[in-house]
Image 1 (cartoon, rainbow, N blue to C red):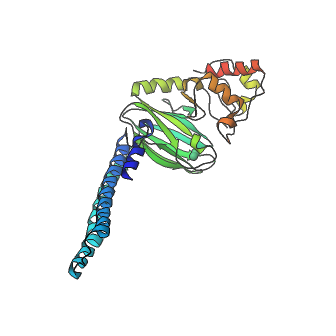
Image 2: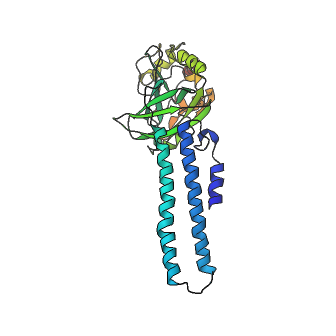
Image 3: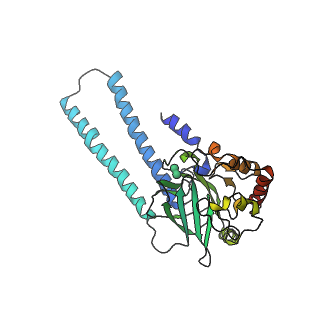
Length: 312
Ligand code: CUA
């Protein structure tokens, strides 16, 4: 069994593994996991030794005095000492989860069936909305304000920390400081409907300069010809800052083509994937609220794809 468990763990991808931590919080959780696993393994081996001895060992009855001592040691003293030690170890890690003072950056993330609305507080207090991708500067403390629009979701970037439930009508706070750059995978960790397993996002940790440049570019309005997009009614749900302002139901598409995935981590950001998504979202993501646009005239569809792929 332990061998099977370790094989399962070895199969985990580092980008989504809580055992490849990239922040102190995640490192504490990983340490706690390994210490608890080692403690559990030692207890398991001792128990198996006793079982084997009882089955195969000598049949000679033991003295009453030995039996009393064995029960006292194995049943009371041993678990008290071991469990108390593990408890103290776990409690000592707790203060690390407490973060006083103001954070360096706030990011508001809302879980919706089945995607993530991500809003940054921009440099001059501007509201910069994007979706399905979270970027954070290395070495800076980020405060996530987590909520949900419809049902309960859960925000988890295993290598960075979390997980924390996203509950409609309330805001949960999660502080994280990533200490190495990289691209990680965040997931929804609470069953939220048919496409719960297809609700993921990319978490990109980059150097503060690169992050600031990215945020400034993200805050800029979009450029392009939105005529076909608006004519097809896409603007009723999707906003494209600077071009199509009314839609706020679905993901903001302002700089869509700069993201690396589509449909909340489900598809790569390519023209072919975008065309497949437009034609029939439900085939890719059951119960997605996006309607199918499979019967658009080809010229209209190509014009929309041109527009969306140009949103860089
Ligand atoms: Cu959202 Cu599971």
